[in-house]
Image 1 (cartoon, helix red, strand yellow):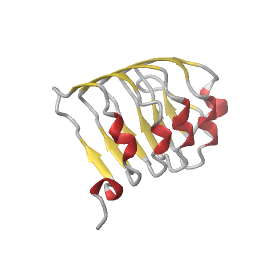
Image 2 (cartoon, rainbow, N blue to C red):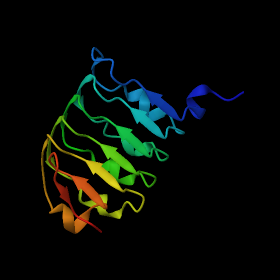
Image 3 (cartoon, rainbow, N blue to C red):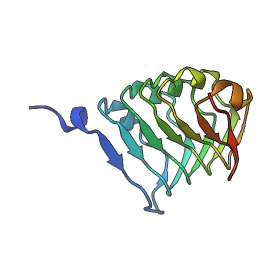
Image 4 (cartoon, rainbow, N blue to C red):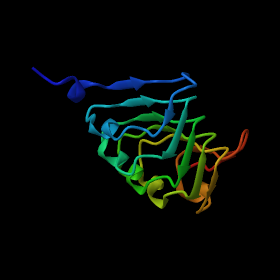
Length: 139
């Protein structure tokens, strides 16, 4: 009999408002995870450095939390990534340069953070939202 952790494809803990603290490291031990929705909570600290282990992840929704630090470079190893929502956190530093290599990525939502780096129109997905109402880059 398969373990539920090996077959779980969707994890939604959105809009609870009172969920606080770190994203549990056990999340990266869910090999079949495709949708991770943790929007509108009070999660803090950094995005898991080994998020790149989630090879099937297509839609991580982490907006409207208090995540800090840099976007981990391992996120650019998510070959199935289609939509990345990191809006309204406290992320800082450079946007990983290898986002441009993610062929499936069609949308990155990065507004309301303190991110910088290569001009997005040269390097990243079809539409990247930096600030509310601002589109940058068409591949």
